Length: 68
Image (cartoon, rainbow, N blue to C red; front, top):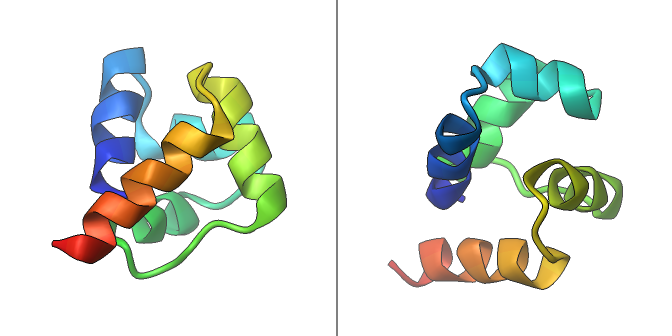
């Protein structure tokens, strides 16, 4: 979900700030951004709300990364 990094930066958040806002660790945000971890349903919902974008769009970002 490298696009997640771009979206996070567009919002002006550090990994720590994003982690605090959705209730996960900074390490987990880093792992999501690098693709070494996949978000669960609850995390997808929180990311969707925080980024103000549909879950489907977040899932498309995940699919784009796995195709590369």
